[in-house]
Image 1 (cartoon, rainbow, N blue to C red):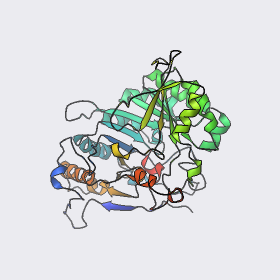
Image 2: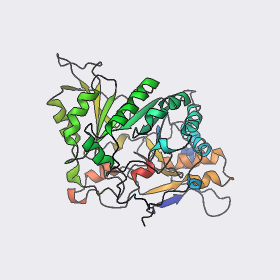
Image 3: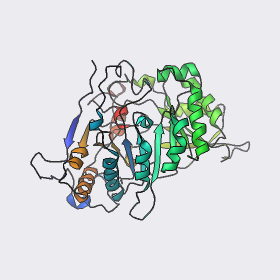
Image 4: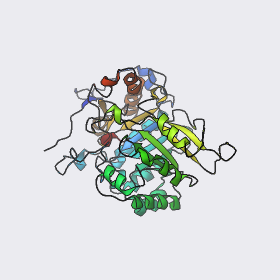
Length: 385
């Protein structure tokens, strides 16, 4: 039987009753001023919240079937954060500067009554009284039937994972025989419901789906959907990652430019992970009507220096990097009953203030044979992408 990998979790609470130790960092920086920064001066702006560790796909780069089989022990429902607990924690992150919340999984639309959580999060406001940017990443399998309810609850945008237009390629990658047409129907339903702008993420794996790069770009050009190509990453320990299966983003752009002229665009926001490229018109100028594509180069061009994201697992473990090997147990803090919101805010502030994570930068300095090795990292399916 396959069991959940045990990751070392750093408890926020001391084992002594009533004791609240300050996690690494200066206590003065823990105040929820909206300006919390880590040791490298990076602000806290983006919170990714995993709402389930379950998924109905078995993508080889995330939840390979040989590991996540019928005997895999998922978290019991009692271990998951309730919607009220998630909202309470999120409120304190917002007080520290978070402006965007992304719901992830697993597959987040498998979480029952997710619209209730979305409505709670949509009611939160920044210290300046502004609404949050509430978005969700999904494989699209349930999107057609849920899009209108998600929008009505307060969801603003969706990002859909789609690794190719050819059914044989896509079914090989999702490994559950799910057709492309159903994902495209979900994207259409999301557009009709007013969820947008919609982004589509394609993980590119050399030797598997790189021939789908240009067809995907042609399909979404001019539709208002932003297509983003993601380098195959060494997240977790179950996907058998090898550097020779990574197709660098520069090669993705080179392939696109042979068929579709592109113009480099500026980043749309600080800490943006994607490098943006706009489709050019006959004069060689960017034409917004044609749209844009993006490349996310977390393997070959690390963007750690601007990373402003924190990740909350479905059972309340706070991770400071997608490639982290340890987390902080916020669930224990929330469920003890003797920690008020100020104590929760202080813990979050001090955790972020002590943050040193820059995995991709450190990996890039290693020789090729050592990349992807080292401490065992948390699985993407556990904390979301």
